[in-house]
Image 1 (spheres, rainbow over the protein chains, first blue to last red):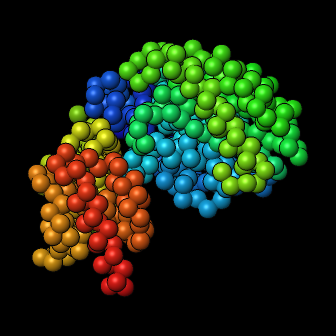
Image 2 (cartoon, rainbow over the protein chains, first blue to last red):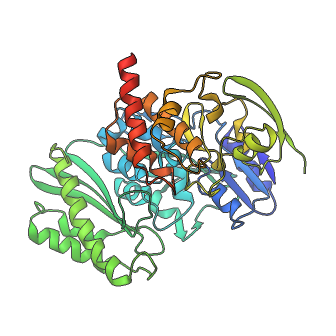
Length: 288
Length: 159
């Protein structure tokens, strides 16, 4: 295995474009090293992107949006004094992943590129409308997060392409987000169902919403029917029931040891209601 | 396969070693530097027996490559005591018998020290969540938690 630690994304892209065999990018390594150890993936070329300038930076831009470096860890996000105030759902979703030790290494970008349908940070990012910059041999392109994973363990990134930055939109006024997952214990587990909700209100009425589901389909889903169920409402009981029904209807889960199809389908609706209530309270400036 | 030369700092001392790029930091600590305090339990970041600090941040050394240690500061259990004088956490672990087989203990000491440096007055719940990535199959955790809580109280009084 060849190990590279390039100084720029262009160099990283060129290394990957010219490599033969299996190439992996190394950010936090909490998935890549496990896969190497288990002989699931044995890279011929490993490209460590942590020596590129700026990859550890959390930056609030002039327009209120955020740029998150690809090697920013979950612990660094949780410790940031401002990011969690704007986007508590995104920060809390990332913080749910693994132990203190894993939080010291794991990254949003790695969680996204590992392309697990159960990745906790991904539904939160999808709901928040996060986009990524993809750097490749032909330059940069901007891609919504939901277009990166294409199937379990697979992404839409072409040979020589890698994510070079994450962009979270400006929070703006009267907005709130939340992410909830179901696991059978209190900590250190993989989502059986995950749900992210991001919305904006005018007075008591929801004017914008994005709802996402994790672990109920081959990829994280952006469920437009869920958003339609609550936009224009005051999140009353009827709206919550419509939201839950839309969430359950969007599910296409597998049966496995962690949850049956029936269980995941029902829980998706329950979590959607709970996450929507939290996001709504946050949008109103209430503590939730 | 060519080996890579790595220069790093372990417990305040500059060290260097040659390693294969696939070798984990845990393997390098144990096999290249003869620092066998960090243990391999699972090798996949689940058990915490290999916990070390990397530039002050608690990590599993089985999930870090040796080559990634270049230019970094590593802290291991071997650096916790001051010469022959045990760290207060180590004394409390003995006092409370917060270990049986001892395989998890180096990782738990490193993790608990990192917690108390960040949060000198943790609640029991905070200690339990912080140490959730350190598995112990002997003690049932209760003695470990009490030893950490009592160490925290003692260190607060000492300030």
